[in-house]
Image (cartoon, rainbow, N blue to C red; front, side, top):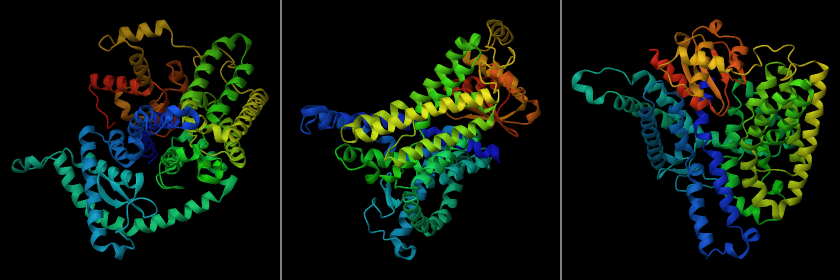
Length: 533
């Protein structure tokens, strides 16, 4: 079960990776169109303003079409074969599902407690999907329908029909079955979802009024679940789904950014729900504090080597918002330190929220600055100055807390190992040449070498059941977990760490994981093995 949950989390991450760039584009265009910042050049009738309006519309693509992106993204991550065809089957079935909803509510909307004559949007509970007026099931409906299609695809895509029915094989057969399945699914949705929407409305009110504790608990869960790979299920419904605001915090924030940028009212007063998207603060302020603590506690003769590792990992966290490289550095030598990190991250977010800080701040520095600080600084400079003061204060707190705990309990963070074991050595030139000689038929680039090292450490091709990835992790299901090598073997090949949950193995690779996965799968194919990736 854990393997399936982890693979599902990885699949959800496929479309999520598109949001940072889209957010930067929209944030910059709103900035460039703001006359308070740009002056007279931002005249709505001028060419400058009109040009950035065109660019902004393109930037909204991802936010406005989130359900469709998740419908396509799920098969990419979960289909075991013919991924492209699975995507086509999913999008056709999802549109069919919404056409069924449209017809049912047009004919019998009042019987389901839905006023289908209302305009889509607002508080109507209705939306437009590819020109179809339907219930607003947001990304939840998209994920459920796409997952159903993937299950049908994996089971029936290769079904052999009699020759005279051959035209209905493959994708056609899957779509036919899905068509029949969507009829009862649409009927159930028309009955259940209005009730769910009412519950969501109640939840929005509760969380919006839960105050500082609600923000603390949300942020703590988002951080503490990172080792399991299940943190996507915490922030997803809040940031991209309807947990606290229609369409998700990310979309709602960008839609109202112009309003916030020209209003002197408190951000917290205008958008209290934005407290549930402050988890990026630990990436910008907390991780540097941890890295500095690791550096000063390292052995003097190892600090130069350690500094190179920590600087790159810290910059990755601060700028890109990817924290796994440094978090997994200490997670596996002292898991309780990760709990301390989660508590400090939650406390920092809660304190910031108490002082009026809200927004869409779940990513890295570039994303947060362009969607928050830069366009809103003129009217909300005091709020952000307070935020930065709190952030730097917590950076210092992080440093002293981690420094104390590392020294007090003699934690073997980088540069503090008892010896020069294989857990910290770099991948040598001799190792590279040996691997290259043994695999002359495989490209000798660094991704290939690393993939081959991981493949061997995972017990070889015959031990691999399936492989996928998220932003930083190679997620692999194996036949026999006892054949998987110790963490030190993975680290010697460049991994930041390994998460083990029975047969579900996660190798923490870093931002190059898509390239490593590609070489990993190529190596499997060349050795005659196929997986359910």
